[in-house]
Amino acid sequence: MTSPQDTHLTPPRAAAEERPSFRYVTAPDRLAPFISDPAYRETGPAYRESGSERVASPSAATGAYSLPALATWFTWPALSTDLFPAAPWVGLERVRHAPPRPRGHARPGELRDRLEAAVERAIGDREHVAVATSGGLDSAALLAVTARLCRRTGRRLMTVTMDIPDDRGRRPKVVVDRLLEFLGLRCLHLRVDTAPRRWPEPDWCEHGPRFDGFPRLHRGMAELAADAGAQVLLQGSGADQLLEAPGYMAARLVRRGAFGDLAAYLKDAAAGGGPPLRELTAALSGGLNRKISSALYWPTAWPQRTREPGSALLTEEVHEAACAWERDYRRESARVAAEAGMSWAEALMIHRTFPYDVVVPATELLEAAPFYDPAFAEYALHLPAAARYSSAYENEYLRRKHLVTDLLPEGIGSVLPPYRQRGSRSYSRYWRLTRVEPTLAIERGLLRPDWRTRCRDTFEVATASAVELWLRGAEERGAHMAGLGATA
Image (cartoon, rainbow, N blue to C red; front, side):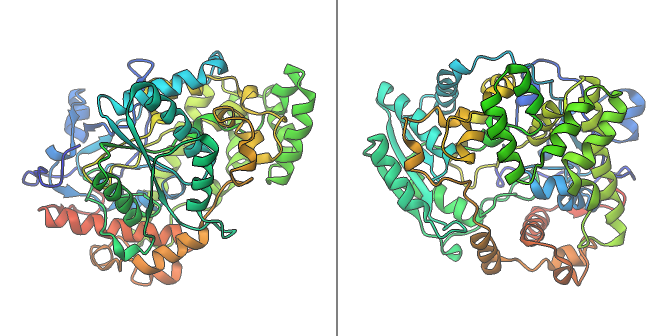
């Protein structure tokens, strides 16, 4: 990625007067959909009329940014997933390769070796490795696999933890210390000071506003690791999307004859807000016309996406463009699933995973997410859906994360919290302390002056702050606003 110092924004050209759109293109090879590094092509009437779609990059952009494109950061897909939506630069469009149908042919017994190979590719020839540890299952599994590799290859290992208490008051540092003892690891364990103003904001990113949950603490984690000698920082992003059991699996468990798993699965689904009626609807959908099945899928599986288009924070001038982009996203996602003949369980796996973007580094320290390594991600997507769930574990969290749990030694359930860690209180507190007043976003016509009274949740506050910081950074580097209606 081009560094902020190297970014060169060329003089403005005439902008195409059209809204941002979302579309999938046919993947040129099997790994293309799994490459998370942002890719772009030039857009606009001139390029479409000539039939040419030239590869481009933000450093070759016009220097004009698009407010309708930035408005897509306030849509449901962008607010709820790690996603750079529309490219913020006029004349550029994100290249999104259509995801494949999950085939279920991958072998679960290869999971550990496949992940270790992904970790080795992420590390390369570096000798000192840091693993971001949260006290959760995914980072614990990544730590265990990385430690095995480091022992085998003689590399140095350290862990670094944002010690943010979860909603039940449990502190990750305590959990990780216990995990290290359980795994028999004696390595440096660094704790990030969670006072947000202790750390500066991460480096500006040419790809668009950042979507880190705790960006200043992310920077603190990277700085601590680098100061201690780490040459790469590994993160556990992607395990939820690729390895957790999806919904709508009842029919598959019946066909497999796994009635013990079925009973536990339906009980877990009901407790988690996914009543058995949805499972029945999904099972019956297999006998329906693909178009009808797709029409039923979205309001059943993702009701929030169909009920809350756009954001009330946006001005009237850009709100419809954001809503239209979101409709494009749903339509394209449904088209790809329908054309591939995906079941609802397969579609759910696709829609929680694609499109995805890995959080960009907060500093110059290399960061990597081995679960999102393209070769590993392709393998993981094609693991059998029914193999992702097991009733053999003592709590719902471990049952749904069966494949990840098996990467850790027996008894891990007594070490880690028996639930998915959520830090909504810490998240709200962080953004109360670090919120950036979006004066430029209001002045340019992106957000309403009364945006704060219209906020539905902290995610919108965080996004408003991230967009404001990006706008300031872009204009400091010579960028300017294009006319309303210009596209990315």
